[in-house]
Length: 153
Image (cartoon, rainbow, N blue to C red; front, top):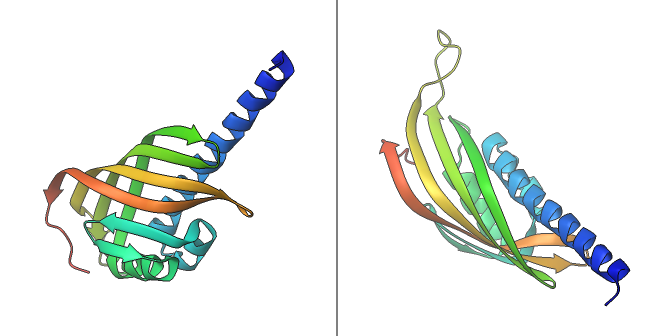
């Protein structure tokens, strides 16, 4: 392998890591803002989710589960950090930290609602390269800690 090949491979890996990281950040935005229809563009057709909100198999079931667990009457913020990606050709394993904070919709007298539940989790993802680019095929959360009262969907 030439130096040129090594450099090209390194650049390709950087681009792949960036694309996968952006998928994860887009997932957080979709969940926070209730843009569930946009999740279709970041998931494989056979994607699976295993979260405290339940297990779902298939992109449509996963999107439906996300809608049930992230309702319009809640303000939710997903903060994702420490994204670590292990690439293996057209597949990737990803680990990240997640802090999800839930707050009930506030009345007119308040500028912003107070959080009622915060959950610290480890995110696990699997991603695959498809004809349309990288897509998430597995989303799994592993609760580590929580505070407050978990909202009911």
